Length: 326
Image (tube, rainbow, N blue to C red; front, side, top):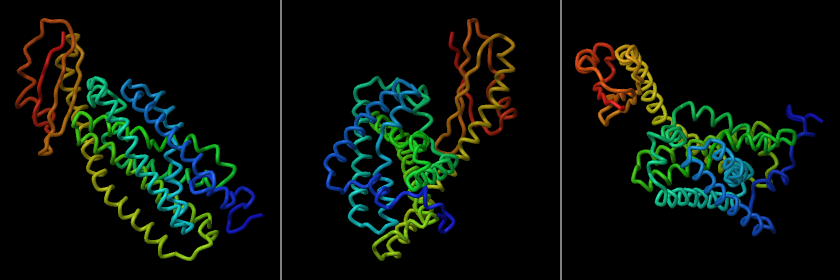
C-alpha cells in the first residue's frame, strides 16, 4: 500500500532499522567485538593503502570499515528520540575516530615519511584540502545512506555509500600527518571527516523526516530532535566557510599552474625538456611556484623566467623558483 506518498511495502520496519545501526541489544557484546575487529582491520588496510598510494587498497578499507553504523545510530536515535542509543552511538563514534587516528599515527612513526608526503602521495594530497565540492558530494551521499537504511529495495547501495563517503581514510591520513608534525595537513584531513559526518547527520535527519520515520517514535520530544538538527546545521555552516576559502585557493593555484605551464613550457618545451610546476600559497596569501625542468644537460640560461617577465605573463604569481633535474 501507499501511505504519505511512499510505498509501505519497501519501507523497513523501525525494528529492522534499529537493528542495523544500534548497539544496545541483548547481543551487544557480539556487535561490539565485530565493530572493533572490523574497524581496526579497516584502519590498518586504509593506512597501508595510503602509504603505498594504492587506490584499490583504500577502497577495500572503505567497504570493510563499520564506522557508518554508529553514525547512522546517532542519526536514527535523534529522529526517534532514543537518548540511550544516542549517547552510546556518540561514544562509539568518538572512540572509533580516536582509534583510527591512533592507528595512522603509529604507522607514521614506523614508515618512511617520504612515502606519505603530501607532495608525492596522491592519497594524502586528495584528503588534506577539503573544498565545497566535497561538501556537496557528502550531502548527496548522506541522503543515499539514509534511504538505504529506510528502504528494503535500496539496501544494496550501502557498499557504494561506504566508498563515496570516505570516513576511515581521512582519519588515517590525519594520524599520518600528525605523526610528522604537520598539523595543518592533519587538520585538513580531520575537517574532511567532520564534513562527511555532519552531512550524513543533516541529510539523514531530513530524509528520515521525509519518509515520516519520526512518527514511529514511541517518545515525545520534538524539541530534542529540532535542537540536534539545528546544532548539525550550524556546525555544517561554520565548516562551509573554510571550505569555501579552500575552494577559492585551489582555484587560484590551478589558474597559476596552468599559466606557468604555458609560459615556462614555451621557453623549455621547444628544447625537449619536461616542465613540472608546483604552486603553493604562503601565509600572506601570495602564490609562490617552483618549476622543475627535467631533461639532459646542458641547460640554457633562464633569466627571462624571473622578475618582470613572470609578473607580466602570470600576474597572480608572486615568485618563481627554477630548478633543473638531469
